[in-house]
Amino acid sequence: MAATKVEMLKNIAVLIGDTDVERAEKLASDLREHGFAPPVISASFNDVGVKLEKGGIDIAILADSLGGRVFKLSRAVRHGLIGSNPFMTLYCALAPEHVDGAKHALRAGVDGILIQPVPAKEITDRVRKAGRTDMAYVVTSEYIGPDRRAADRASKIRRFYVPQTVQAKLRGQDLDYKDFAKKVAPILEDMMQTRLNSQSARLSSTCKELAGLYQTGQITPVVLDKLRALEDLLKDAAATAKQIDQDDVSVLCISLAEKIKAFAEHYTTPSEKDLNLLKKIADAVAMAARTGVAVDAKVTGIDSGVEEEAALPTDELGPALEIQFLQKGQQLFKEGDEASAAYVVAAGCIGIFRKVAGKTSPVARIRSGEFFGEMAILDGSKRRATAVALEDTTVSLVSKEHLEEKMAGTDKLIRTILLSAVHNLRTAHDTYTQRGRSLKDMFDTLNLSAHIAGRHAERVDLGDDADAAAELLAQFDETLEDLQGLSAPAIEDDQRDDQILNTQDIQEAAE
Image (cartoon, rainbow, N blue to C red; front, side):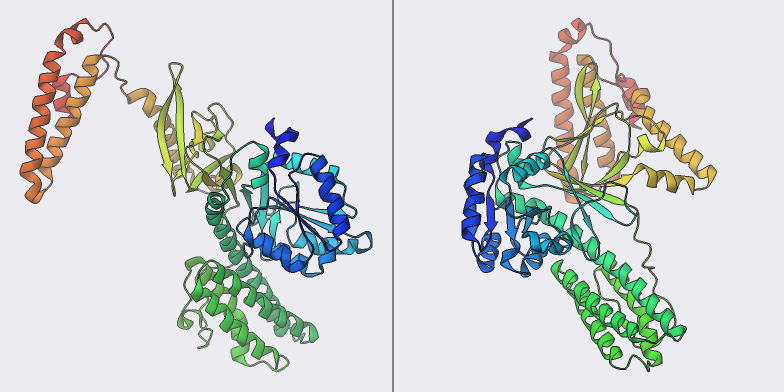
């Protein structure tokens, strides 16, 4: 595979951030010997930030000699706050005596931990391996970065298969960083929306926990710590909302954070209004995060003390979803595959193809917002077509397990009707679609289309365009009749069987 060829490494841009210039130069020299392009060396924290913001970096190796801020820098990259490549390969290089910093680096979303002095071979091996595997990211209230767990995750943890410049270059693809930034922008926005939803769920659990402590009279300094953590979480949620242009939600979170801060100053003697705030705060943010609009205080009861709960519960975040990025021409599934998921096109376009008489024929185009691939799951059959990205495309995956769970929970009669409908749709193409074979078929199809268009024009009020439309249809009919007359000898000599309705049947069918 191209991903394992040494010559592809020369296309990868590496940044080494380390205040120990001699050590950085040694690593850069070793990487060149392993086939990499000459790395860029930055000897200060500020210069690293400038280089990352400028862009064009595929791999960043950041040493802890840059200081503790290097972890915040890595996190800022993952959150799309620095540069335009949030999915670049990030390594944190730790001194042996600083290995306790590994947990901070991993929480920041780096791809891996390296121990100084860093062996160039280890980096080369890791990069080659990454080039052979699609990278899955996960998003929680606190974390955006590579999925480090092999086992299945909880249903509310979303996984995103993200495009990476390292992978593209290892596969020999030409790369324009500006185009790449445009591709990843909607994926990052979806990630931040997912993070905001996750933050609202965490707000809910924290508020419920605090309400329980007050209800049981366990008013200790632990309560104060949790109130301060709640304030910080609201500020973090405000920043997330701001990043995805949900300004009203951001303002709401800031306002609530100020109320919690005031509450914390007298946490041992809370008012009824304070306790009511804990009940309403999570639902207010959850509703706002879903709609992108700040919730009116009259709805949430935050200021008025109204007892109705907000309409949307925070512990129902929807099905387990994964995000997958497909490059133009990449196959999503092929005819005959087992079905493991259904899909929604988030951005781009999917083409559906089937083999007919040994030839691959287009069946449909699936565009942004459309759902497909569910029939094979519902009736347990294999894929009856092949799905290919017609352009760079992002799809959301809905698992087979989730669909089956929803089906199992429906009424038996409804389930039977649905499965019957799926079967009818499955067989409709083979049973009813008439495949044109002969030259006569072609003219009969054109006649049918023209007749239907004429009938439609008669039934619809075209206003001032009615006469022009009628004239055009008449011209088309005359031209088609002349062409069919000229083709009469060829039609008579055509030995292929007719499959389309004849002229008399066309009139009846069109009615």
